[in-house]
Image (cartoon, rainbow, N blue to C red; front, side, top):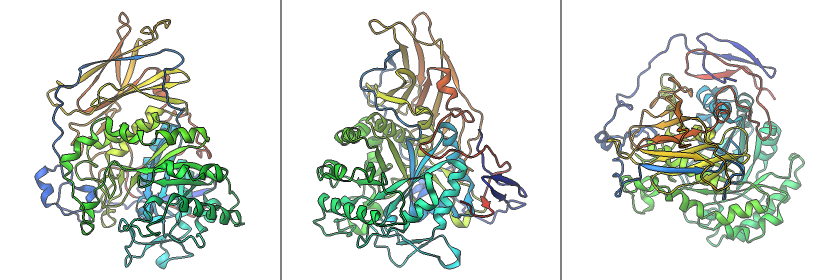
Length: 624
């Protein structure tokens, strides 16, 4: 099933679930102007004078030095043929890697309103749906905490910001929004099987504003996953947030969640009251254990859908908000922190007790918001190829550690770390979208886990510069994921992984295949800002994408040594290789052949809107 969205030179009508779509594009592409800055061919020296939006910052860092001693160039990978191996993760859903969209920029990313949907966003979601059947997206963040649902806004707007008030901890103005935002999300879901998380405002608890719950259930139906009950409540008592007294504690949060549940129980406009809430979504000011110790899960189990936390490995807040003080970090100094496997394993170890607690209580455990660094990320790191490798390693580490999902955050034009960024509003008639490195991570992760919802992950890493994972399904190995964080143009740091299945363990017969297929995620350097490819295909560079992969697909076939019963796969420096051990594991994630099933709703009938790509799909009317 191919789900490609674009705009027609004139218009076409497509009937889907009793709705009609008219899709338009200007007859001639008009260039109204633009920046004289060349975003695709920049040198590091240009960054010093750059004053434009962070999303297109040209800063290029130096890649970390080649390790001394060098990495091993021959790496054995021994797998068992049946029954799996010790320490496998729980079975993971293919839609593990999702997105968190800051609510204040949802009208830029999703669409102007329920009748004007962003075509590139539809394509970006469709890419993942083709591979694993569904996508999970959260609309929320700091801007949800005081968002107000109103009947209407001036000029028919869907979303409005109070720009006179920026008391939010990340400078985001308070929001007002209409139900049209929810209808927009529902329309996206009917086209792409996207499922949504929303957040209940926690700024005012007397009473809670439950309109988003009432209307969210009514409009989104089965496409709604659940509601976040508070965003980073462990920061509420901090001076930067000021939501609560400085003494605010996990016990206080426990009480507020109880009040929320009681109000939901008394609200006749909320028909579904069980398995509704995501808690506690804390950062690290409180340990998750301090929240579990309040008895929140046992006390409110029927109301809680899943447990969640939020975590960034670092922050760039001192640079973004210089008035608050703090030490401004030099991205070059910390680049190496994102290019060693222990960065991910150390973060994941913080949650070992919590993931075990979640499994024990039969609850999912979601990383509800993450990315390279809070306060919009770092120039030269968050928008580099190194970030693609880091995000993929972090996602696999979480999957191995029994998280059940991870949502990577998307801000606006002022963010370095966006998985994808629409062009500035005044350039949307002639510029396309910018697809960042973290979206490539999402696409690869979908293929790593696949559509069957049975993938179990195990970490086989022996060197922090070259993480290695194996994926098992129903007890048999199906894929191997091989990283190389090193940048070395000489080729001396390219390594060969020698994969063997069975035969190396007493009592096991050899099951090494005669050949394997390999897809590569590549760029020239970890510091590269452009020319990323996944299996030979790309989304282009800044302002270059309509959300569809372009270029010829390149899947490498590696013949195995039938005498030694080994398959030797080369991993360049830098790069990532996904080794498909069976033909089924490859075909299952090929676009058009996904057999995945989403947790709830199913995809509507096959369709495609063909033509040159730029613009938005215009929905003739709202339906539901």
